[in-house]
Length: 254
Image (cartoon, rainbow, N blue to C red; front, side, top):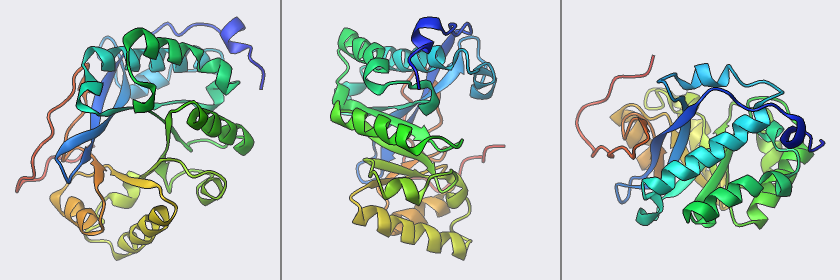
C-alpha cells in the first residue's frame, strides 16, 4: 500500500463529533474505557456519516475521527479517572502505520492525553490483507497503544488472526450475547470462547448487553468488562452516567 492519501486524498467535508459509551468494569461499577462513536455535528447518526466515506476520503475521515475523539476526551478529563479511550480505526485507511500515526500522536501531545490510555479497535467487517493488519497491530503495540478486535465472531479473520497476534482486548459480537440467557448454543460458544481468550491472556469484553438476564449470565461466566444499553447509552460530547444494577431492563434497540 502506498502513502498517497495523506498527499493526494480529498478531505472529509461532513463536520463530525463523537458520542461516548463506557465499557464498564462491573466489579467496581466504573468505566474501564469509553468508546468514541462517530456522529454528525448536526445530529446525524453513524450510518449517515459512514455512508459519506469513500476510497478517496477514508484516510481523511479516519484521521479526523482520531483527532476529534482525543480532543473531546481530553476536554472531558477522561484520563483523570484512569479510563481509557477506545478509538475505532479503518485498517484500509492506514497505509504505513508509523507515518499514519503522526497526526494521532500530535493530538495526544497537544492535549496531554496519555498514549498508554488509547485503545485502537478494528472490526473485521471486510476482507483485508492479513499481513497489513498484523503490521498495524504490531506497530501500534510497539508504540505503547493498546489494541482490540471488535465484533469478534462476526468477521473474516477470527481465529486465524488470533493465532498470529494476541491483542489486549477482544470484544465479543453482540449477536452472540443477544438472548444468551435462553439460548444454550450461545452459552456454550461464549463460555468456551471466554476460556480460550483467558488462556491467551486476552481481556474479553461483552458488548450489546440490554437485559439483566444477559448481564447475569455473563457475570456468572466471570466476565468483568461489559458494554451495552443496560449499563449506559452513548452521549454526544459527554461521559454518560453508569446505571447501577436495577430490577428493570432497558428498551432494546430497534
